[in-house]
Image (cartoon, rainbow, N blue to C red; front, side, top):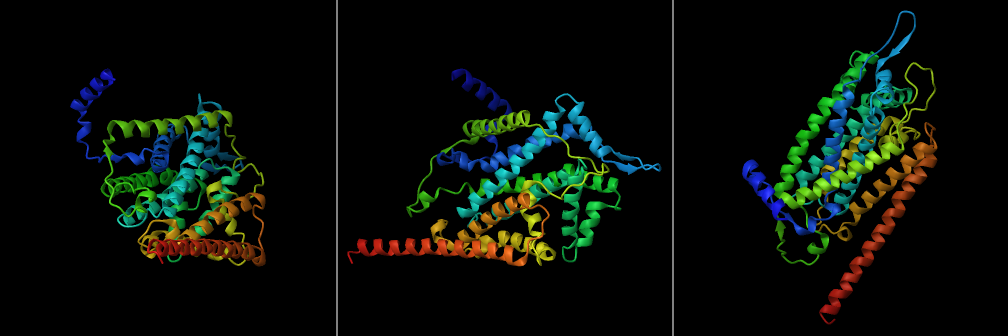
Amino acid sequence: MKVIDKIWDWLDSRAHISDIPLKGMPDFSLNISYWIGALVAAAFVYLGLTGMLLLMNYTPYFYTSSTGVVNNLAWSSTNYTITKVSFGDLLLTSHQYMAYAMIFLMFIHFFRNYFLGDYKKPRELTWIIGILMGLVVMLMGFTGYFLPYSEISKDATDVGVGMAGSIPYIGNIVVTILTGNGTASSELSRFLALHVVILPATLIFLLAIHFYLFEKNEVAPPLSHERTNKKIQYKKTPWFPLFFVYSLATALLLYGAVLIWSALDPLSLPPAVGSGAYVVPMPEWYLAAFYKIVDFQYISTNIVYLLMLLVLYLILVPFLDRSPSRDPRDRPIFVAIGIIFLQYLILFTSWAYIQPGVLIPLAEWALISFGIAIYTGVITYSYYYMYKNKGKVKNKASRGV
């Protein structure tokens, strides 16, 4: 330990790491549940590094010659990386699987913070920036899915572009930004620019603001501490080196898990655009639930409004939830909404894979959707009612009534 301390003292004296304005972290935050957001950031770093390597062999070009020969260089250059470049299959597979891990961890981070009420004062702006970051991450996944230019990625992306075109007032502008002059090569170039430059730069900017706000407002304490109604003085440990090593270790565990997954289950490219293969338009799993709603009778033309309403709710929830407590038991309405949304996400995603592209009649989807909302609301309110009555009984007992 003395050797490590000497090395650390030498490094600190040269690099002045201790002078970096990072607050100490409370001891209770040395728990993996507090580091899911950090794992999302670690996944983004890995995606940036592997993305730069993949970019070296990628060609965003597609054309049909005068003799009718299809030249899909986007697909063939991706296939070249997989089949000819040393460890190219591991590189591309781990890039895609890390994107899956990043989005999955982002969903966990979102639902954890939502149910624990971490959007409450003074963290409202931190929450809003986090929602914007989530949207950017989803767009990065959407644009990246298109780049290999396979039949399934193109058809699924066309559905997404069509949805974007129905955005009120700015739909045509968004479609022009995405597709350019309408040719395949123009669309590939636009999606590539969005995926590797514009969206990552936007995410880095938002991440910097998010981290700054996190430093200023600090990590939210455990609910068990809040329930004591006492002012607790938290013992803080300097961020360097303990928490730095902890975050580095968890990031390396994530990298190792994804690399093992990639080695055991390498990707294979679907048929290329121009191959003539028939596929059902199907996005990646993290967008499947929203694509399935397009199949709901009488609602497909209004899905953009539903998505806009969802985003608006998530941005405004810190101001809509007026309960002074973060305890989920004191916030039955917002907890019920979160549970309903989580159930919809799981159900509609599964539905998309079971019946891809199948039109769902009004009576069927309405019965299931409203049934879930009603029984979730009843169960949540019943629990809230019992919780409040239990509290009243305890208060009477404490007063000797």
